[in-house]
Image: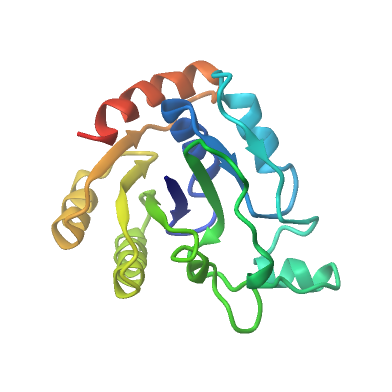
Length: 203
């Protein structure tokens, strides 16, 4: 089974949540497009404790922290959606997106266009800020319009019960996990949330 981790914007916590999911499911991890350093693969490697998860190399690795299409232009190349090959594994695969799901790969393709060919269920991360309700509902609408399977929502950061209530009312999505703002992110924190996620994953 493949799961695609995306968020309502940039810096929403995709890498941390990918590490938590990998730890909970002892799943493999793949970041197909890395734009900017440090590499998210290295971050995940430092946060998981289990010995079953394999971390697969990026398909595209760019130095510039930018939209995938812009990072590719800066490296004088083009991302081809036909070039992607899923890692060979018999394990569950966690795929971390780059930015939100509607970021462009090139002039024609968006990141969301890769999800169906990869036969992945989507995990959407929402973090609360002014405008996040709109961004969450728009992202869910885009996923539903393409008939993409949605595993559920993860709320990351400070709690906003009213925002969560209205988001869930309109999306009818399952809440997989709520992650609070932590003073430090380390393996123990990841283990703590992985235990909570595992209890909710198939419930």
